[in-house]
Length: 637
Image 1: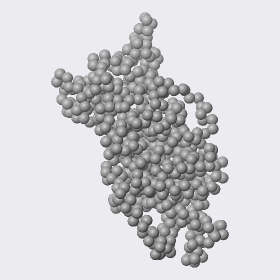
Image 2: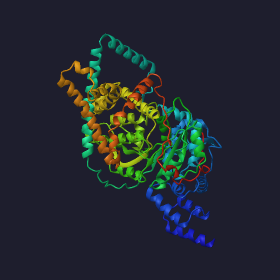
Image 3: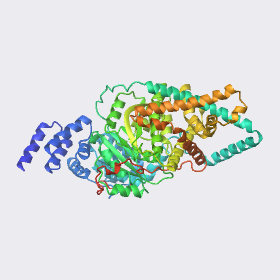
Image 4: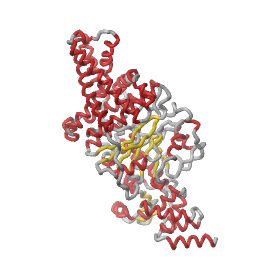
C-alpha cells in the first residue's frame, strides 16, 4: 500500500494539471482501476487531444462511466443522479430544447430550492453553457450523471419530439415529403393513355419521337461519360496530404442497422480492426425500435467502450435518412461518417478522412471514398456489379470532379463536416436515395464534394430479384430528387451555374430515360443478327448507320470505362466478364419500371436489402468472438 501511495505522490509531482482532472487520476489510482503509466499517458492524451480526461479513461482504458461519474461528483461536491431511474421534469427539457441539451451535453432535471438542477457528464465544460442555462432558467446548480444515462434519459422522454424533428429537418422546399402520389398516379395514367392513343393513331410518329429522344439522350450521355472516363483515366494520383492536423478530430461513424443477423458479428470484428485513436472514435449503431432481430443479436454481444447503440423510436416513416437524422443529434464528433452494415472499411480510413479535411478548404464539406465488393467471385451477377462499381468510382466520378460537375454521393464511406451537414438540415428523411439528394443540396449551397483514396468493401447483391428491388429504390430516389430540384429550374440554374445544371440533367433525367427507353436501344442489335430494324425503312442508309454507329460507340465507351475501372481496382480477371454487361443492364430497365410505379403507389417505401447472404468463400471461418452479454444495454430510449 505504501508503494502505491508513493506512486500516486510521484504522479502528483510530475503532473502540472490542477483541479478535478488531476483528482480524477489520483482517485482512479487509489482504487487501482488504472496503472500509474496509464494515468500519465491519459493525462498527456487528454491535453494533446483537447478532450475531457474522463472521456479518455472511458473510451481508451475501459473505466466505467459510472465509476468516473462518482469520482467527479465527489471532486465537484455535486450530487450524482441517474435520470433513467429518476426521470427529469420534461417541461424543463422542452424549455431548453432536447436538441440543445444533446448538443451542449446537459440535461435540465428538476427545480429544487429556487434553483434548476442541471445534469452534466463533463463538469469542466459546464461553464461553457451556464450563461445560456441561466438565461432560460435563472439560478442553476450542477449535478453529475453519465453520458449514456443522459442520452438514454433524453431519448426516453423526448424521443418522439426528436423523431418529428428528424423527419422534417430539411426545409420543405428542398424535401420530397410533400410528394403527391395520387397526382403522380394521375399524370402517369394520362401519359400512358396518350402513348396508347398515339400508338393506334400515329405509330410512326410515336416511334420517331421516342427514338429521337432516346438517341439525343444517348449522344449526350456518351459524350459526358466519355469525357469523364478519359479525364478519370488520365487523372494523376492523389496529391500528398501535406498539412498535418494540429489535433485529430473526434469522428462519429453512424452505422444504420435493420434486421441484421448474419452480418452483425462480422461488422463488429471489422470495426475493431480500425486504426484510429479510440478516445477520438465514436461509433453509433443506429437501430429501429421495432427491430427486435438486430437488437437481440447485439444484446448477446460485448460492445467496446467507443461503440454504442442508438435506438430510433417509431415515426411516420421508416427510412435510413430518418434514422441518420435522429442519430446526428446524439453524435459527439466534428466529422460525421457513414458506413453500412455489410461494410469492410480500410483500417486507416479515418486517418484518411481527418487528413483529407485538414488539406481541404472549408467549402469541401464532404469526402467520398471508393466502394468495392469483397464477393465479386460469387456468381455472374456479383462480377457484373463489381465491374459497374469499378468504372463508376474509379473512372467516372474522378472525371465528374475534374469537370466541375455535381458529384453524386454513394450511400456509404461518406464523411461530412458536421457544421455544414447541420446547416443543410441533414438528410431528407423521405428520400429513399438520400445520398443523391444530399450531393445536389451540397452543391446548391456552395459546398463541394471531393474524393479520397480509401476503399470500403461491401457485399454485392448477387440474386436477380433482390438486385432489382435494390436498384428500383435507388432509381425511384433519383426520380424524386430530380423532381424536387426541378420545382424551380431558374433557381436551380442560379444555384449551380450552366455547366453543373446541364450535367445534373444528364445525370438524373438521362439515367432514368436511358434505362426506361432501353428497349428502343436494344433494337440496334437486330442488324448484327441479320434482322431488319424498324427505322431502316424511314431513314436514308447513312442516317440509319450513323445512329447504329452511335449506339456501338456508346457500348465501346462503357466497355472502356469498365476495363480501366477493373484495372485500377486490381481485378483485371474481371475484364472478360465486362463483355457480358449487355445481359446485366436489362435488369436496370425492369428496376426503373418498378421504381416509377412505386412513385405513384409507395413513394417512401424503403425496399430493404438483406446482408450476409453471399459472403465470400471462407468468410465464415474468420475468427470472431462468440456472442457475449452486452456491455451497454440497448434501451428503448
